[in-house]
Image (cartoon, rainbow, N blue to C red; front, side, top):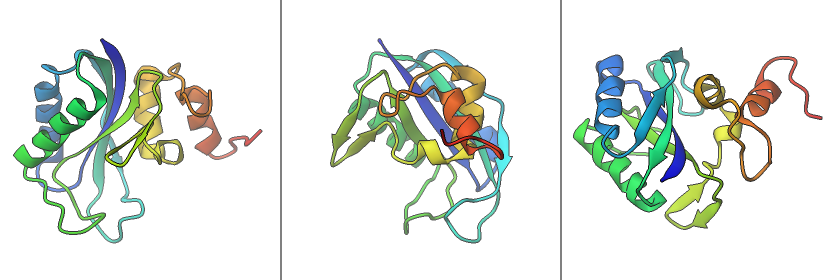
Length: 156
């Protein structure tokens, strides 16, 4: 069983119901699922869109990283996500943030997630449930990464 952390987001439809339903469905693939509170956030880097509802979850999975991503894509499709263009509004977005202490750099998968260190909407909810988890690339905890992004955070 590998510890995993994921980020969830939605900015179309009944966002809260979608996130709750996706989390319920993920419980069969991720044991001991711990979930942050839901955070309403402004869209970042995707143009003019409705606000997002974001959360993070962590647990342990017997699935490989690729199999877990396949499960994420399957759930996104079940909740009506389409990908007409990069950054399009979405009913459900699931991102694999951390997969144990592994660093995976392949064409179909990048773990840790490439941009999670720069995203308050990922780090804030993730720090609620896994502040002490270590980013295997930087060696910093999720809590320390969050402090760096918050106003007054130090880059030392």
